[in-house]
Image 1 (cartoon, rainbow, N blue to C red):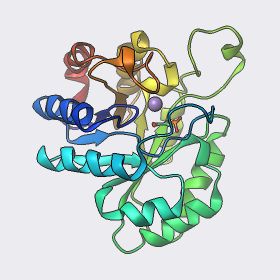
Image 2 (image 1 turned 180 degrees about the horizontal axis):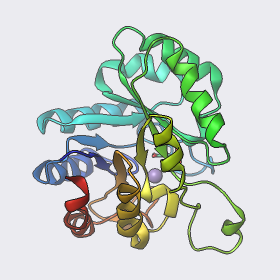
Image 3 (image 1 turned 135 degrees about the vertical axis):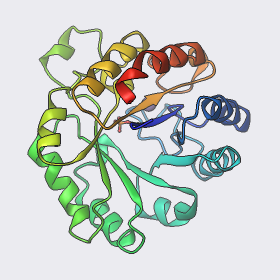
Length: 245
Ligand code: PEP
Ligand code: MN
C-alpha cells in the first residue's frame, strides 16, 4: 500500500478496547494505530482521556502487533513523559496556533526527527497552517504530515456535518510540496460520509488518511457518531484499494 493509513479509536478507553481494535487493524495490515489519550474536549465534563495509562495501553497493543502509535499531546510535559511510547506526535486542531508548543516540539524532535502529524486549525487559513509547520521546521525537523480535518464555515449553521471538508486544500498543500493526510472522520462528524470523503481525498492526491474506528461506536466515550465499525472499515478498505496503488 502506497498510502499512509492511520486508524483507531477516537479515545483509548480500556485495555480490552484498544487490544481488540489493534488486533483487528493488524489483520487488515494497518501499520499506524491512533488513539487519543489526552483529549482536548470542548466540554470540561466530557471524558478527558485515560492520559498516561492510555498511552501505556496504546503502546502495548501497538507493539504486540508491530504497529506505530499515533497520539495527541497537549503539553510539553505530556510529550516528555511519554516520548518513547509515541511514534507519531499529533498536534491537534485546537493547538495549531499554540506557538510555544510548536517551538518546543521542534526543539525536542530536532535530534531524532520524530514524525509529527500537524492538524489544521479549524478556523485557520492555508498560509497560517503552513506557517505553523514552519515553527517546527525551523529547528530542523521537516518530518511533518499536514493533516486536513475540516474547517468551520457558514455551512455549519444547518448542515448535518460537523465541519466542512476542506478537500480542495489538498491541491494547495501538494503545490507546496507537503505530505498531506486527510481526516474524513472529524471533517464530517458522521460515519455515513466517511467512505466517500476518503475516496475523494485520495483522488485529489492526499498521501493518506486518518480514520476513527471503534469496536462498538455506539458506546464510545467520544465522537461516537463518526467512528466506523469493523465492518464499515472493511468496506472502506475495499473501496479505496485501487486508489492506494
Ligand atoms: C483527534 O484526531 O483526536 C482530534 C481531536 O482531532 P482534531 O484535533 O482535528 O479535532
Ligand atoms: Mn475524535
